Amino acid sequence: MTSASQDTLAPIAHGPGEGEHLWFFGGLTTIKADGAKTGEQARFLLVTEPAGFEGFVRALAAPAAAPEIPPAPTAPPDMEPVLRAAADYGLEILGPPGIPA
Image 1 (tube, helix red, strand yellow):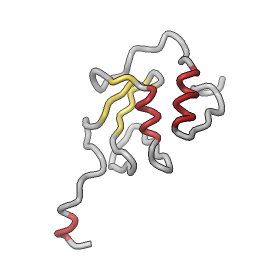
Image 2 (tube, one colour):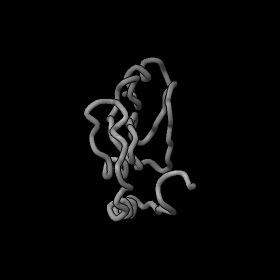
Image 3 (cartoon, helix red, strand yellow):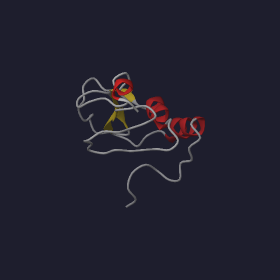
């Protein structure tokens, strides 16, 4: 690839502080890229194959007013919408969310 053609490529990931901020399962999730996720820094980087997991996150998340941790949940999530969204995106839920006790 020549230098000239590299200059015309669109970025595939958002920079620090950028991206779509969502509250998802009691945490702050920032979608940094759709399809191809890459970058130099991350607190947690989830790479899924094939692309599209961001659609599942968007289906269940609430927009974050600011890129900060949301208030703690007061109850476990209603699993009916989670299972419905999982089916819509070809995912299988194997157990409840969270780390087993």
